Image (cartoon, rainbow, N blue to C red; front, side):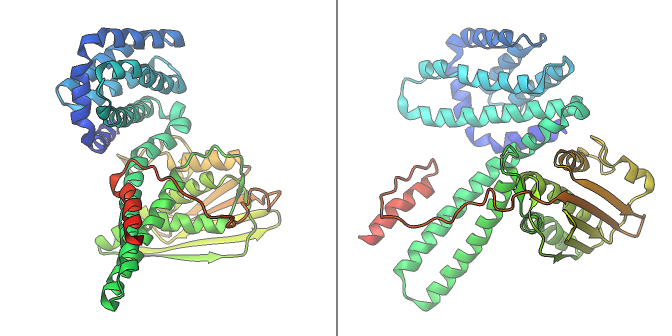
Amino acid sequence: MLDHILDQITDQTHDHLSVLTEFAVRSEPFANEMFRAWNEIYRATQAPPTAFEEAFRAFFSALKQANLREAYTAFGTWGIEAARARVEYDTALQLVRDSQRALLPFVLRAYDDAPHLPLLLDALSAAFDALVTVTSAAYLTVAPERWVDRVATHTVGQLTGGAAHALNNLLAAILGRTQLLLAQTSDAGMREELEAIQNTAAVGARMVRRLQDYLQSAETTNTIADVNALLRDAAELTRFMWRDQAEARGVVIDVVKDFADVPPAQITASALRQVFVALILNAVEALPNGGLITLRTERKGDRVIITIVDNGVGMSDETRAQLGKASFTTKGAPHLGMGWHIVTKTLQQFQGTWSVESKVGRGTTVTLTLPIAKTAGRGIKPPMTTTRAANILVIDNEPSVLSLGAIAQIARA
């Protein structure tokens, strides 16, 4: 798994390589001061001894040689050592983040030319995000049963969050420019083409929005979830698997929604969305030759019942008995066996239950139950109302998005 993660973060941050390499070279005169600062940060945690300083030395040495993957590998090695030494996972992440903050004085010493600072700060932010991700992956590699609850969501979020942000910027630029062009033309044929572009970009933006919602932290005080809306969102989030990828393999998977009018459930929306996505993906993987997935909701007394049914390959009683155990998987790499573990932990946390009925060759039925929310109206935001005209200051680090404001002003003039 670690090699797979290293490949991904190297690809995601490759655009920053030249800036990082230049910084590694520029900082060489005071490198020993940096390493001593990081060593002091480590000592302050009173964590078991590890080669933390050596990891940074290897990191910077690889950067000077423009070898980004090797730089991240140094922290993968350290993460494995730290996990085996029983350094707490939260402590390991804090060490990386504290080290990032400790870099700032050295950055200012290396770059007295301010125009280069924004590029370097962006590059270092991306690089240290990657170090956090590879450290998390290393902890999972060593002891998934111990660390899975705290590591899993972060690792997945870090790997895909950057891509979602970049896609959002691209779609915003396409939408904005299309809307400006629509405002400037009355040609019917041209408007039809522009509207098609606008609608397609809008669909993409909604998909990215759902992905970003999925990646949001579950740390929220609002424990009221619209079950039908979240199940519908999960179906859309996984559409690339059950429709696009399935059709590319020459098979058809249909998803049928059979929703009753159910009240909100007592659970955080982000947690329930993760559960639904994990279970739908499991159902898709159980349909290698195509088939049907049915998503059903109903109310029974003070519980909301969610059923996810597939007519796929099914599973044996022995496999069914292992569901919910950390790192158990029948799928091999790169699967981590965390899907059912996350489902189990989430439902336990919110007083939910789950059950599975399955036979080999006869499909699987997964049934979840959740308590109905105690206060259905709590946490619902009131609609926004227009008050007065105002000026808006637009700040963005994506030039294609930022320039839309200037283009709009010129168009009005």
